[in-house]
Length: 553
Image 1 (cartoon, one colour):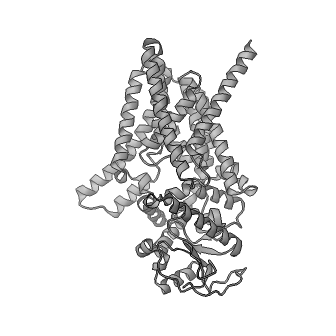
Image 2 (cartoon, rainbow, N blue to C red):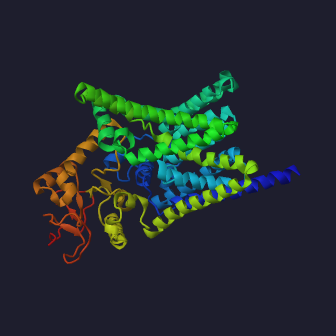
Image 3 (cartoon, rainbow, N blue to C red):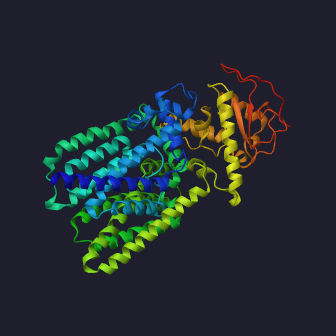
């Protein structure tokens, strides 16, 4: 009897996990590459094959996610980048779905509710984030880290404190900021338990193991700037926070509608937890959520305090900028973005469970409304992606121009054809200057770039070099009129300085011709959105044949 019961329970778990994976596929199952896959998978591929795009500035910079590269990155040695993306997505979705099913069942023990709560989670995350955080999407270290965070929360609500620290330590090994903030919030939840909390001495071994795991993620991050001059580090921090990632890091730069909806989400969650104050498991998760909210409040407070100090002293000094950059580069709002939809989806289920016996009709109507609302949100996401089948990495940088999906697809396919021609017809050691608003060149062309806006290095010296190249190669005039907006002498001097062999020109921006040999398309009468030009004086190990072609008309 016990064996049959156990088999039946595992069948339910298996079915629910499959449904959750289906939810994730409907939400994030677009063709690769996703938003960050071009960034992380290219880095992992280069880590295992240094000859691939070996002249690329970003790929040559220091590696911050060694655990991800060692546990998953090796796959890129044997399969293509799109295949690696699908393998990684399936791994993350399956592991995350299993962890989610256990967490959801611990809080709302009802068949199939875990699939509904997962759907609520992804829908609310899309519409409630403050700083642009995402959890279910492309393949990167963060996806594996959040899987272990959810597993740690299952252990937390089940009062298995030894497992909590082990899971969160593994999360920190994959991504030190995701796992590190989660460990801080969990420590707050443990301390909040009062006399009912597990004794500290009983946790010394799992905490030690968690610390060892976390060191695997912390040490590469600490060694990024080892031996770097302090002035260089401060300058890199300013570029990272103010110049590149202010939309993730600076509270005063966030859209006020994002702040409003995030605040309303926390107020709704607070009401749910007030109604569930008699549920001990929900209250344990509430303590963790409160810790995540407190971390975000600290980030906002740091930001606003320094701005207020600058206003009172009559100016924003260099020291204030350095202090703000050094403190706010740690993504204070990341855990709050992820924890709000996670906690809210499970708290709504707890409310339905509470009223199931007292007010069954209200509970049933509430469940119907919840299902219909979630399905509407999930369907809208799926239909929007189906209407425009371009990869998310392409959609992120090139939304549909003037609502013309046909032109957007033509532009994307022309870009892919251009990259494929480059992959087949140019030397493997060539360095390219590409349009600023693209992030998929290495993915499709397998060639190095002089610089790429998306691919920002993590170590200070490389970050300063990256910023200097951005300022030199993508001036305001070039951002408006394309690479042909460069003065010819300035352009050729910059190409010589950075050993650039080819230029990919975006004809939709650049109406002028480059006074250089055009190698793609080869016939002057051919019309293409993207054109490739060769720098004549740049010699490569394997010259292109034919090399000398007439300039474009």
